[in-house]
Amino acid sequence: MPARLDHTVVHSHDRFAGARFLAELIDEPEPKEFGPFAVVPLANGVSLDYLDSEDGFPSQHLAFLVTEDEFDTILRKVVDRELPYFADPHAQQPQQVNHHFGGRGFYVADPDGHWLEFLTHTYVID
Image 1 (cartoon, rainbow, N blue to C red):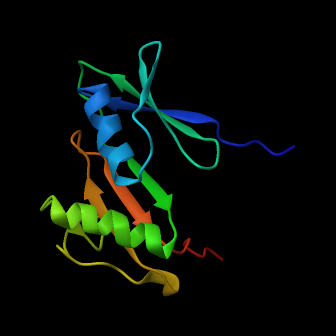
Image 2 (cartoon, rainbow, N blue to C red):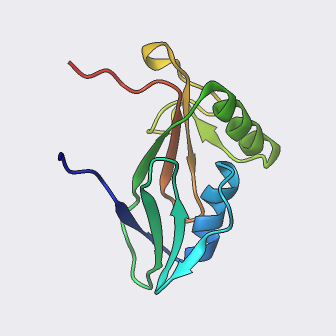
């Protein structure tokens, strides 16, 4: 059996604030506490385990493949909250959506500065 990602840790200044931000965007239930973590389960069985970190930590990039309808819903929530979003990870194309590989995508920063990317078509790498 090939290896599959089961979970990853996302460092946060406030584990529940970070976890709720994502959970609300993607219509997941309230994050659950598991030991020192606030856990956001994803549809494919992977979980993001948010952990409080007092020290500084680097920004992570978390990309989520979503359906067209889910994309529309997530983007609408971002726009309704008047959050800055970008078509690119360098934040050079504000309030725009990209159309890479025939899909749509955008980036938004969570409360801890992690880049959340939402895309409707996976990137094709030859």
